[in-house]
Length: 385
Ligand SMILES: *[C@@H]1O[C@H](CO)[C@@H](O)[C@H](O)[C@H]1NC(C)=O
Ligand SMILES: *[C@@H]1O[C@H](CO)[C@@H](O)[C@H](O)[C@H]1NC(C)=O
Image 1: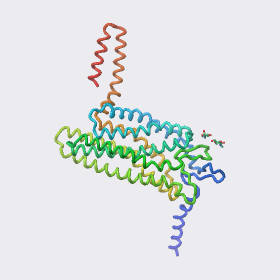
Image 2: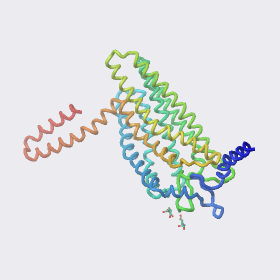
Image 3: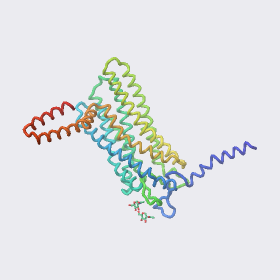
Image 4: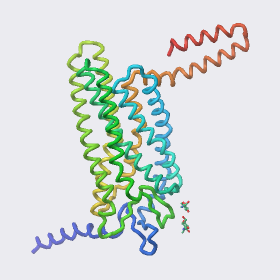
């Protein structure tokens, strides 16, 4: 008697939230207004979050950092790998493509910054929203794949130091072309459904922040495309590369451990460890949280469940964009050329301007001596850098 009552209580307890979920109270789901099909109605929690200072101040600040750091760093990386690297290695090819992927995302962040600063009001139309969203996720999965290639190549270069450079470069170029084609193809679902939603209250148009549910009783068809996209990408373009990277680094450390006597091997080992730590941080901050939350979020949308962690989900997506700022550290630890160019830019340029100021100052005082000063400073410049 008591047991059956307990059981029925348990059943009510378990099924009540599920039946309630088809109604109101779901995070960031919008329903088409029955009175006006052009407008979307959201619940109070959603409209509060869209008005909160987290989405209108904190998020744009992070995107501004991404833009200010990511744009010059990746542009410089592309320039170094294209024009300033004499002996092209497969790793330079992968990093050049990684920088290009980052740059293609970073150039769209000003739109995103303006959107959040404008109170999450997207005024640039559906096509630009689609471009922003697909470049965001395209960059994320491109970055994962290029980092995977770079990691495998690092291991390969240590394990087979005598393998042919030209052949390896050809393979690297082929792999990069294949990755770009694959990412462009798999982004198609993101172009096939509307990302903007015209909300009733607040009177704003959101971009990719509110999922429109056309039939509250049967939510799955409305979120089918992003669901399949993110589940597929999470398994094939996130989980498998993760496993490959871990295996590559374990093998790399073992290969480096075998010849510890030489001092060059010691240096290589140190570099490899620093690279591994950088990639690890990038994954821990950018890729692991966002991919887990994406899979969770769309799995919940599919069955029409409440996502109470919506703020957390948005935060992880924002953190994912930081990979454009973290990738330059990878270039720095892998590429000698990039390292020296960064040092030149950060250190020598300032000393050069100091030098030039001194030269122009002294040329005012001793106009006869100024020639020797200029040639002197030019000499020290090149030797110091
Ligand atoms: C909302 O904005 C539209 C223009 O996009 C305007 O026509 C409408 O009057 C506004 N509604 C309110 C309540 O401010
Ligand atoms: C959002 O932008 C639209 C179009 O420019 C405008 O009509 C609307 O009033 C804006 N909403 C807010 C809350 O500023």
